[in-house]
Length: 173
Length: 131
Image (tube, rainbow over all chains, first blue to last red; front, side, top):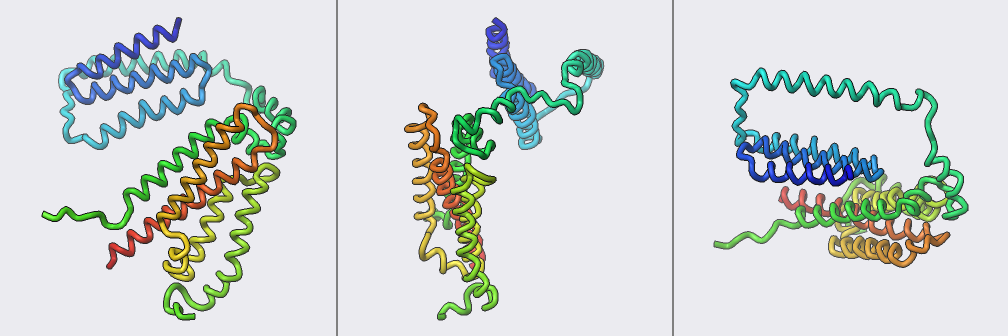
């Protein structure tokens, strides 16, 4: 049910990102779509992916686009100082309010909750035949993750050898 | 030796000739013992690529590029990647015990050949710019 709400929210933000006139507002609406996607990952019990999605979609998209095409972005801030200050204060208050409850849920410092990793340590030798737990996890329990990692590396190899080849053919006019 | 003017001095060449086999052997050791001790396909492949780079720094560019050019490097890397994919498709759904060293070997072929190809691409690009 929550996933459907988040999906409707994402569709609405995507429509806003397409239709809005201001460029920087469009980019921010696009990153709101990414925020919704990371919430979906969080609801589907994949917090690792959700953190990555949060970093990539929000920080990287906004910072990269703002950094690369900063000349073409007219940013009007005159006359909006009251609204901007009010929204900053409201978001800081909401963040502190939610962070107060989130911090109480953290485990006590120095007592790691090794619920998942203790299972791996107990079962990896008998299930995979590997005494190195790191190799057992990365090549057996998370093999698809390693496959994607190798695919990324292979794409990087192909990209470098395609870009940094011998001096290309000169267009003879 | 006729290529005495290429590469570094005689001292470096002699030391390289004695040590490069050991470095390559250590790379094989890290790959093949990745499931027993520390190591694995990525680290071992990098060590194997570094031994070739070491040879190339000491003896000059042509000593290695006669054996492994860029096209052959890309081919070997592609073979490693396809081997890894084929091993996963064949053996991963069963979760078979004892398949991990073969994954490591496939990854090391891809990583070693690929990193060496990247180094070769950058070096050849730089030397052609300078000419």
